[in-house]
Image (cartoon, rainbow, N blue to C red):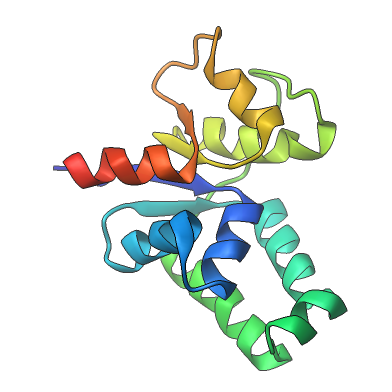
Length: 145
């Protein structure tokens, strides 16, 4: 059976990496256990890198330049890179558009997010096979497969 293709929003990815508890952490653990494939784009990778390098976050979670580089390299090695094309659906927060475009351009099965601007799209739109879900809903789904 083919593993699901999943785009993990920056907020979930960062939380899952630096806080070893909760649903975001469980999502990252499922990825590490090879239960699904992660899709990334250059924009997503750049945003993750930018957030990890913020002084407040790096200091609070003891992130070094080397540890941040290792995270980036891991994503480049294990993630499936896509070049997002725009336009299938517009997000009410333009800063989130590249996340949705990454999911559509890769034909992802899931977009895992906690962002209400993205989650609101899960209701009332025809998204073909893409499911926009919270980390908990994603964990529940993957656990039943």
